Amino acid sequence: MDIILLGPPGAGKGTQAQRLVDEHAMRQLSTGDMLRGAVAAGTPIGREAKAVMDRGELVSDEIVSALIDAELFAMGTGTGAIFDGYPRTEAQAQALDAILAKHGRSLDHVIELEVDEEALVERITGRFTCAECGTGYHDRFNRPAVTDTCDVCGAHSFKRRPDDNAETVRTRMALYRSETAPILPHYEGRGIVARVDGMAPIAEVTRAIDAILGR
View (cartoon, rainbow, N blue to C red):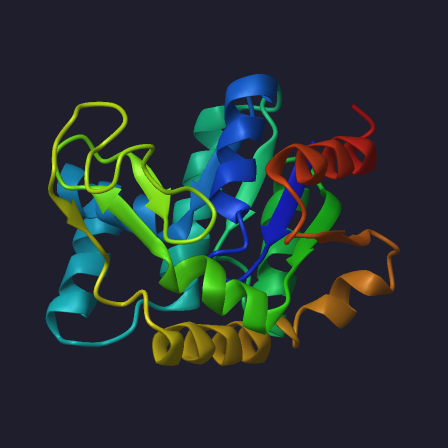
């Protein structure tokens, strides 16, 4: 089964994708991760991508398509794919259709985790982690049992991501909407787009996704 999982940063897309990887043996295909891996490995595609990035240019659709093509070939037909960060344009959506068809595959579902912007701002701006072990907390929803003390390792230092602020979150939301809007009509005509409340508890989101996938 091949799916696209959509959602703005903070919607819980990463959590759900990892669960699908762990529980259903699917493979998460993140174009960013694949690019970094190809560059680090020094593959022909990686060398081409590195040359482009070294010039300060954006990696072309052709290079990204080649990465996906190679990954699907390596995966074989027995493993389902979760596409992350691709496609983002109509042209990329058409390219993905062609790549999947080449491998005898097709998209089964496009699942979007919908969010409320104000609630998402609160969710993200309240996040912080233990500086020692990385355990995650939240100002409102998940504070340490003892103030300024990590529940897991007992450390007293915490940190926040510098980009977890309201302005950045709203910019991410606007960018997500501008990038996602063009591809949804491409799939809605096929009847494979489904939407899930990304603000629901994680377990409820999981159940909703599993129901869509027929699991």
